[in-house]
Image (cartoon, rainbow, N blue to C red):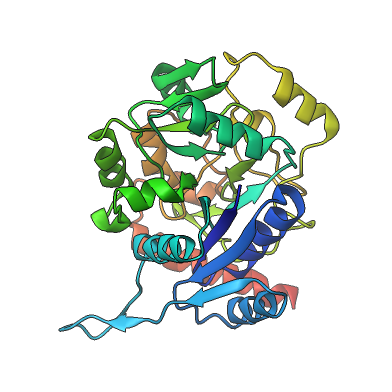
Length: 326
């Protein structure tokens, strides 16, 4: 099983480092490649150079100026995924794993290559095998849409034909001349569904999205660039957790919150996985998480003080408190 692990990055040094180092420590299969979307952040660029010196293939996509606009446009995830597929085809890989730069590998599954290969062989309609914990933020919806595949010891989450992250057969991608340029995960998924293919999910996953921290101000997440308190953002699974994950019945869906815990920091449950507006994300998901703590003046003035005034007052107050600390 010749496997290429491809990580897609752009200007997120701490998350990228967390992803790559957990991949190297806990996944341990295949070759690693980074496709970077023209990062300009000094820490990210330096880390990419360091990885390159240690033998990791780094493909740097250049920014392109769109005609008629006065701003830079990056190639984007799907163009970079197409670049990775072409590299995998040219270098005769059997499988390619698509990995985004804000995930973490949690434990080493020595049987993972065998399990992945078994799914592709046992299920001829498999377009992709996904190695992700499920999100508790959509727990009820997941249970409703999940189909258990006992013979292959995996799941199918209706109606997915493909996801943005997963392990794909390179010969299958080549056979269908597939390109991710269809623009959205749904469009790419529908493309495979129309050809009677499905995405299947491992019953004992080892990877998950890193949840956003609990630093929410003015309905915005404000701490994207902070370093992890310990080696990783999430505490790797111990032997007891791994045993519980591996030995549970298939009906017990592996949700991230039940196994993967923040390491030295706090995060509301269910986890949020969005940077800009967690309230809107959760509204769409049909759940109401606990609201982040806010000062009394915000609560009292919420209905009478315009948002722009509250934003400026908040910034001024934070600036004052910072100056007092110095």
